[in-house]
Length: 172
Image 1 (cartoon, helix red, strand yellow):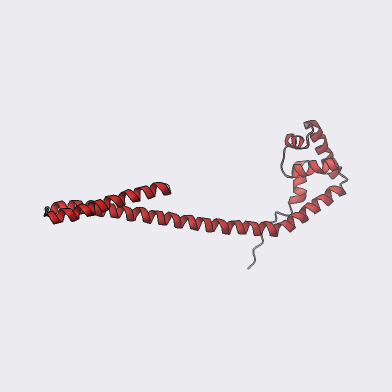
Image 2 (cartoon, one colour; image 1 turned 180 degrees about the vertical axis):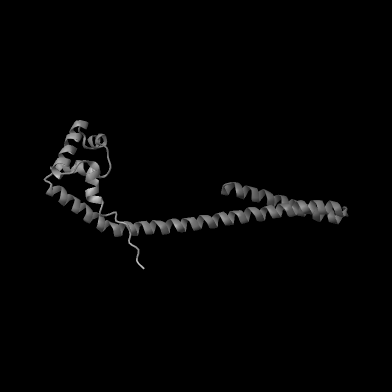
């Protein structure tokens, strides 16, 4: 139930409770039987209970939303801090990869292909991104492997990444 619907229901229940209270005042001054007053009073109390229930539920929902927003802000801040801290390492890794590609005497096009392959793109995707044919991408990838002395994509990725993914050593 959205906020407008809750307000409408609470308003209707408040009107019902007010009308019951006015009817009880009128009935009691006219000498109506007690059981009649108890039945109408119960209806009024039920309306008041329902108002309390909806208001409590709205308050809890608002509180959970506020907590979620606070947690979201906290997580976004942590992510931004991690990205900022990791940026220097990413830049260093990028520079190191570029140096190695240059050591292998790769052309500019071959470097682009190598980087796209490292990102995990297929030869078809490499060709699409570079606006070349699949055959050109395949020939350039073969040239990358030949100049680097590596057997294929998995060895290319392992060349740059295997030392990054060392298992954590436990310290006592």
